[in-house]
Each structure stands twice: as structure tokens, then as C-alpha cells.
View (cartoon, rainbow, N blue to C red):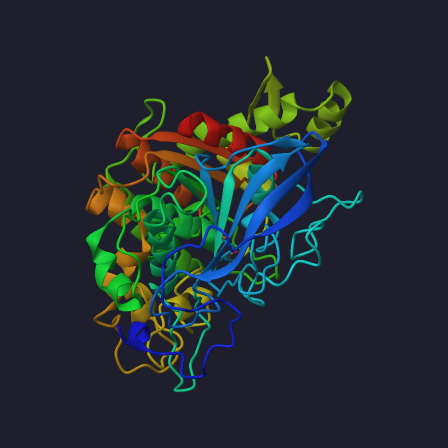
Length: 511
Ligand code: DHB
């Protein structure tokens, strides 16, 4: 890996400790207090020990990103708590496959709201919190001055330990012009963070055998990958090169919100799902022949997966997946939403959305009407491996001094940037395996994977295909894992409308 070997010759300006020792110092904390507003709107005072940025590898490429912070509650609403054996929430803040740093974090929730980063670009997330009593670097404070309900804050208020790792991301470039944060840097970093935590059993607060990962979008993809790929040997050489701690990187449970994953199949899945919605939100109409070719590729891929739907649906194919999504996810999602409204609110909603039939407390509708309801798609065709190399994912698969590369045969064949070779580079197939949870759940089933899965997606989210999450859930469930997957009705990209339920679920699965 050229990218991996690249040293940050610009020099790191990190404030993180970089002694090379991977021994956690239990005494090196400061004591902070924050107010957490729970999902009922009730405020809780939480006193916690906070460990500022700790570099989690012995040979960091860039310690600004390869560092983590730890928060452990010691008093909740005036009552002492002991976090030594509490579950550990490992919340990443990756967005857009961009770099994410906690180097300057001064309190819990450094990455901002609900693990959401900067979708599709923007500045690295994780700047300093304004003060310990108002955490949330991205301004996630509510009117009363307490912090709003993010996974991290709710976890802390529930008595869990919160570990927030930074990770390298796709735009990082050293002074030699080499990209050192492209695939597989982010997953290697998160694994190194897990190994650091595991290797500090008995020193770091929390039960290191009950690590629950969480992330959103690209961070959700990485969380799912972390769950699927636990202890897989295909990452060993990368971890060794960083001087990662010698310990297991398997995690106990996985939380993934709108995971942008299975990237090499996402263009086909996208057209199968959103192809009927030819117009983007920008007003641009996507190329219909490209859309149709990609959709046909999805049919082949889906057949090759040999997955079965949840609840005895049977074999999942491109021909019945619309029916499956309706039955398993979309109609139950609308039903739950409508059931939660007052009678008059429900009447108003149904009057505005006449495509929904509401009968005997259940919502039903057709796939075509649902697509019309969602409306304009977000992305062009292809959505991920752009012919002109302009997608963020082209950058994610960059390497060495090459910023953007194709990662699908179809994208490479149709390249418009004047490349002399119309094929993917020789290292791409391995990089795809390193980045895809489906590889570990289908191609090479990993017995060390997480066995508990919390997956969430907004029904209006057109950042990727709905089948990406649904396939992940079906693959894990097909292996016998415990899968909790719901779609949030009328919610867009990055939504997390039931964080309290996630916290309760952690207690249940780790209990
Ligand atoms: C994210 C969003 C995208 O549309 C994408 O292609 C990759 C990542 C994100 O929000 O992290």
C-alpha cells in the first residue's frame, strides 16, 4: 500500500500525546460535569472523568487523527456510579469518508451530534467544545443550555463509558503529495483504536469485551465494517505498520445509521432503487441508459448474494426487493409513524398523502407511489464511481499521489478523464474487500464478527440505495445474528430519531 507507507512529512501539530507507549494512564483524567437532556426532555447532571486525546498507535502516521478520547461517568444525578464494568460505546464521527479528529476535544461528544460528521465533504469534524458544561462541538445545545440527545451523551447518562476515536480520512495529503487517509486507512485506524482499548483491560474504564460501535453514514459504513471484520487477518499488515496494540479488534455489537457501504455495488443498487426518479434535486435528469445498465448489474449481484429476507420472506432478488422493502420496512415505518400521531395529526397527514391507505391501524401503499413521495434523487448516475472521478468515493479509493480513482469495471470502462487504462488498478480488488462488510458476511464469513446489529435509515434518504442496509441486515440475520433494523419514516440522511432506544438496546444485548 503506497498510501499506507506515506509518512506525514508535514509534521504533526497535534496536541495529542505521542509517547509511543500504548499503556492507558488511569490517573490522567480531569473531572467534568455536563447536563444531558434525555429523550423525554428531562435533564440529568453527569460528572465524568475525561481523558484528553491519547494516540492509539505506537507509530502514528498522523496523531492528529489517530487519537481517541475517553469519558467515564462517576456520578449521575448526585448518585455515585462505578463505570469499571460498564459497556463501552465506541462512537466514531466520520462523515463523508473525511478525516475526523478529537485532538482538541475538551469533553464528551467531540464529534458533534449523533455521530454525524460533515456529509460529502466539509471540514474535519471534532473541534473543541465551547465548555465542559455545554458539550457538542457542532453547537448541539438546546434552549435550556443542556446538550441535546446524542448517542454519546445518552450513553454517558446511562452510565456507559464513551470512547471517541478519530481516524484518517480521504483528503489527507503529505508534503510529498501522497494521500495517506484513503482506503483502508479509516478502518485500520478504528481497529487500532479497538485494539488499544482491549489491550488496556483493567486500566481503562469499562468492560473491554462489551464494545458497541456507532457511526453515521460513512461512519455507519465503518461501524458496520468494524463489526463484520473483527480480527480478520486481512488488516494485519496495516495494523502492524502502525504499531497497533497486540489485542483483539473484534467488537461485541454494531450500531450503523444510514451506512454508505458496499460501494462497488452501490451504483447498481442506487439505480435499481431510485432509477425511476430520473431527476436530481438540482433539476438535472440522469442518463437513462446508464441507469438501466447499472440496474441490470444490480440484478446479477443480488442473485449472487443468495440472501433471504427477514421474517421468512424467501430469496431476495431484484424482482421482489420492492415488495420486500415495502413489507419489511417501509409500510411498518409509516404505520409506526402514523400510530404515534394524534387522531387529528394523522388525519391531516393522510389528507396530504393520499397514496397511503390507513386501515385497521396499518399503512399500505405501492412502491411507485412511495418513490413519487420521496421525489428527486440526490445523486447522478453513476452515484459513486463517477465517470469523471468527481465523487467522494473516487477519492476514497485514491492512492499514492493519485487523488481519485475508479473502483468499478463499469466506471473505469466509461472514464471521461482521459485515462489510458480503462480498468481498475491492480490493488483495487483487495481495497474493496478491506472496505466492505459484505465481504466478511457473505464471501468469507467471519466467525469473529459482531453478533448484534442495530441498523437505522431514513425513508427519504437517497444518499444510497435502501437495499444496502437491508442486505447488510439480511446477511447478518442469515448467519443467525441478532438484527434490529428499522427505517425512520420521512426522515432524511443522518437521522437518528430513537437514540434512547439504542441506549436501551445496548443494555439488553450486553446485559
Ligand atoms: C456520506 C454521504 C454520502 O452521500 C456518501 O456518498 C458518502 C458519505 C456521509 O454523509 O458520510
